[in-house]
Amino acid sequence: MHKAQKEIRKSLEKIDLVIEVLDARIPFSSTNPMFNRLASSKPVIKLLNKADLADPEILAAWRKHLEQTHGVKTLVTSTSKPDQLGQIAQLIRKLSPGRQRQSRIINALIGGIPNVGKSTIINRLAGKAIARTGNEPAITRAQQPIKISNDIILHDTPGVLWPKIENENSGYRLAITGAIRDTVTDVEDIALFAADYLLDVYPDRLKQRYRLTELPPDGVKLIEEIGRRRGALGAGGVIDHEKAARLLIADMRSGVMGGICLEGPEQIQSEHAE
Image (tube, rainbow, N blue to C red; front, side):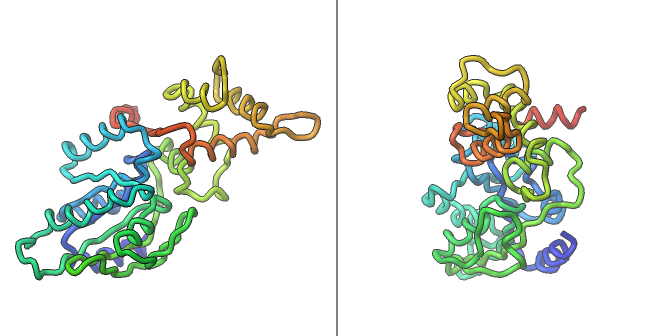
């Protein structure tokens, strides 16, 4: 984090605008406070990526909130729909200072926390595999300039998380979406948070996915029911809670339950008030 911050500060003088790639399912929790602080004097584009995995209604509320409250421009993107990415270059040109000079090179800084799909977006924009991609956090290692057109250069930055996540719920959401490595989290604890949230916000999705006629009373019972129905059983038919927890998290990450957002603008305001 410290190294990345130093590199970004050093390059900001030649940067015309800043692009932050967010996870559309958790726009607040996937926002790096460092970017907000360092980019305060530059035009900002927030890319709400993985939109195909998000709840469209809550996502629309987030776009309105970000544009009206924070004064940034937003675009909804999905790496599964490459045609959406063409809007990015158009918006970069529109927001860049001195854009009336067509010969001028526009330098845009692009960043995002681990595993939000930033490198895949860069590769699609460049038309070739330049940035390393993967389903694990922390793939991009160092800042690098990438020419995506005759007039636009992207300056890629490593995906970094900040040292202290003040909102505990944000930590859970980051873990559910895969921004935090699975090896450093307790999957049963993470799944319990997810289960309680789904029971509260998306009960019908749970019924449909796991063919439930009645919903369990709490997250623990839900994970046990998933274990029974999906064969997560150990010796003697005892439920393997860890395996059942991994099945729930995998379902949430894959989108098989439909578009889900793990937070909304009003929800975050309520958490801040608490």
